[in-house]
Length: 308
Image (cartoon, rainbow, N blue to C red; front, side, top):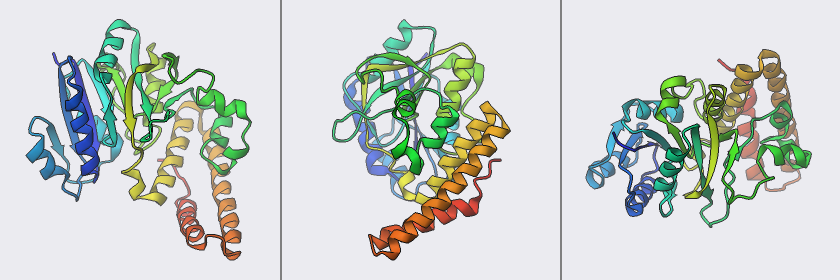
C-alpha cells in the first residue's frame, strides 16, 4: 500500500500549485507517495500545466467549482494511501516534512490527525494549532472585538501557552497541511460538505477526538504557507462563508440556541462595522477602502448568515 496520499484542491493558482508540486519533488520523500490534484474548474492554465509538466500527478478535473471541502472528499475517495495528507496549493514542503509526518504517525498509533509546523512566506511562525472554541472565543475571534478581547481567551484558543517549536497535543489543526490516518477517514467519514470553506477541519478533528483519536501538532514537520490565495479572489463571499461555517459548527456541536445567539451577535457586529466605516469614509479617511468594506459588509447582512 502507498504510504502517503497528498490531496491538493486547486482553483486558479497555477503558479503557486507548480511551486508546491516542485517542493514535493525536491523533498525526495523516502515514503511512497501519490499526489492527487482536484482542480475546481480553474479558468487559468492549471489543467494544461498539470498535464504537460506533472504527468505523474493524478488529476481529477471538475466541471464546476466544487469548493475546498467537497474537493478534499473527492480526492480522499480516490486516494490509496495509509495516510491522507490535505495540502493547500499555496504551500511548499520544507526538508523532510513528509517523511517526518509519516514517521510520527507510525510511531503514535493512537494519533488520528496531525498538523505540520507552518511558516509564513517570510519565515515567521504561522499559527495553525488550536483548542476548541468556546462561545466567548466565537464572540471575539475574527470580529471587530478581537482587538479588545481578554488576552487569556485568545491565548488559550491559539495555544500561545506552548512555544511554536514544541510537538504538543491539541484539539484541532488548520487544513492547510493536515495528515489523517486512513482508519479515521473510514471510521468517521470525510469532511462535512455543509462547510463549504472554513471550519471543516475543526469539525473533522472534533469528530475524530469524539471517536477516541488524539490530534497532534508535529513541530519538526515544516511547511511554508503563502496564505489564502484562492479565497482572496472572493472577499465578500469569504466573510459570509467564514461566519456561516462558524455558526454551523456551533449549531452542530453546541445546539441551536448557541448558534442563533451567535448569529444575532455577528449580524449586529457587521451592522456596527458599516456605521464605523461610513463615518470614517465621510471624514475622507481612505475613502475607497472604506467603501469597499461597506459593500462587503452589506453583502454579509443581506445574506442573513443563515445556515442550512
